[in-house]
Image 1 (cartoon, rainbow, N blue to C red):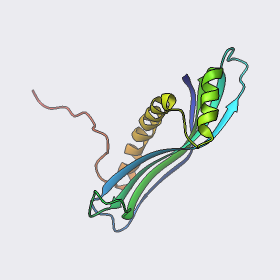
Image 2: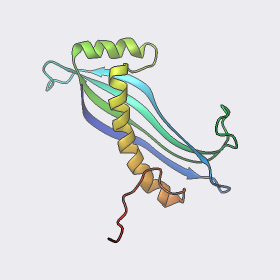
Image 3: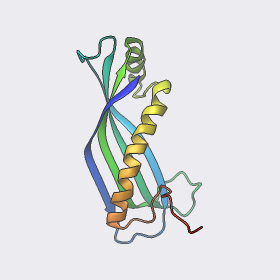
Image 4: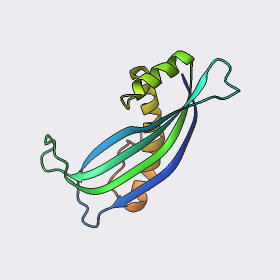
Length: 144
């Protein structure tokens, strides 16, 4: 399995006027699966996965509570990722997708790729609309 394509179809950022320091929740969700035949791939097939990435800032008094708090800010992305897969991997995808899931062996590398692409873009968007310090550690120089 190899990632051969990636694109965004929707980018969204918002901050509530009553924003205050809040709890952050991340989520990557797969929303659609399609198989595609590409002539350049001799012994493989292409799989198109649609996804939604969300970084939600919410007021949550008790972080251990299962209830969602008031949404104070959000950065979200929707897009597609194209993966080259063997016929056997494609069958695994089709079988898992019947339960609206991605095979465990493929989910982690695909989610990590999506996180890398979306998290870096959300740093810029969060800065532009005034959401708090980046959720990624940015390297800093210090005097010696």
